[in-house]
Length: 334
Image (cartoon, rainbow, N blue to C red; front, side, top):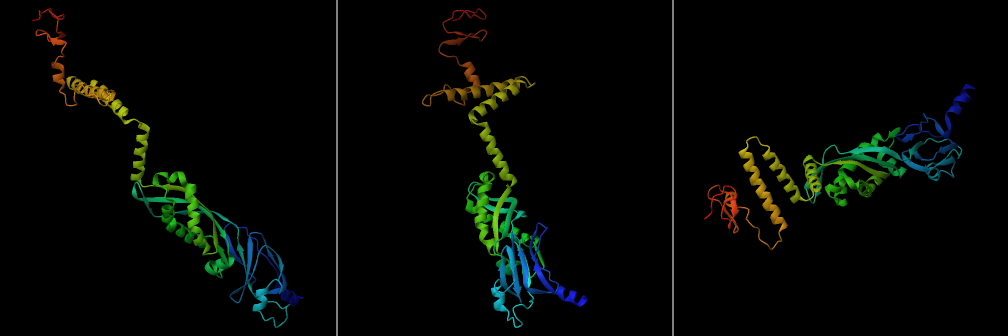
């Protein structure tokens, strides 16, 4: 009875694999030196592909379903084996289960700044990070190019390489998008579409499919961010002429509060005259000439009377030119 049990244990009659992990891409069925029985049941679940390898060569590939291993279901294996002991003889082969579901939330990021040529700022260094998802599209290519004969292969075995591929292609992605540095933050979705188009052929070389690519953040250098902040401030200010007038009026108010008295008042008067002249020029038609130029001396303005007035020689008060007596001190006018 013990001998019969041992002989029965040397043949495998059911081949299947269930995965409880979230990162296993390939699992080699562990037959522990036992032979596969002709007529054994092969169970391939949804999101799986089974690859049978005989003497180092890919024999047959099975999609989802239940198979009875026979010459009808294994045409390549039948051609490779001589079956000199009959079609019901056991055989030894390796069976690999490839996980074809999507692997989500794979992270990528730039460890060093990436150069970007911008029409407005010139050469710009930037950093970026995000996530992507991929799946196995061609199990045979993936076996030949990536995992080989590993007992177990996870996403960690390929994620570092894929991240380097993404970062090295980021400059080309930004160049092909032709999106200015100022508008990058508003076009993450469009950049993701460009990334998929550029990276998909490189993933396909490994038997993989890039299903999605997302950019979570692109950070610009500090000096570029400061330039953007200054431009935003100018947009908030709006009319620069009105803003200048407001700032000048504030300066006059501050000068009037100066405890130095005469110096502060003199400064305030000078600024007030300047802003008054500027406002007069802005309200005049373009073809008219201002009353005084910007270099007009304030003391001359104060001492030069107009054609309708004169100054009293006694008190210095400005009075009408036709007045015979000064209304301020009563002095008779000549």
